[in-house]
Length: 161
Image (cartoon, rainbow, N blue to C red; front, side, top):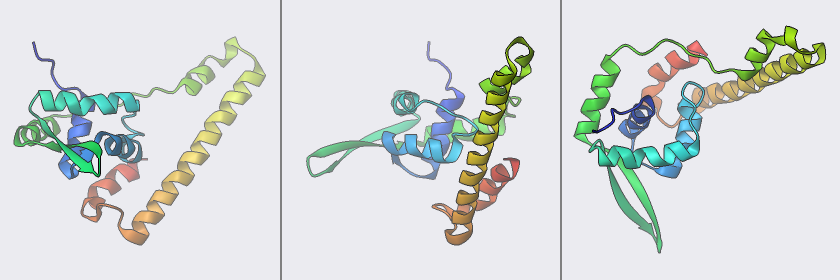
């Protein structure tokens, strides 16, 4: 029995709807564009396009640069239809996986030094994330980003963050 595509399947289809990608490029783009809202290990991202091909939702084509082969994945009409159907359904509720915050929530079971260390780690992560986001916003303001036609929807997600 065929397993229903996962949210990760649809995240990859979303990227393939923008343009064709190699698995390496997909892994990079997942980190760049959806990694904060749907983080996945690169190994998962490398395997998912193959599953999409087996389901008929994507195609794979070998391309060569000299002797070096690479596989490029593209969305099919069936993939676009499946993606449109998935996008039409309401999404699930917000979930948060945040180990440091879990440790803060039970800090009374540990030491004050451990609590301070977790709070410092949370602060450092927030500052890094803010700086990375600001760099991205500045890039989009200067250049329009790699897909300027997508800026209205990118801005909706950016506003959330």
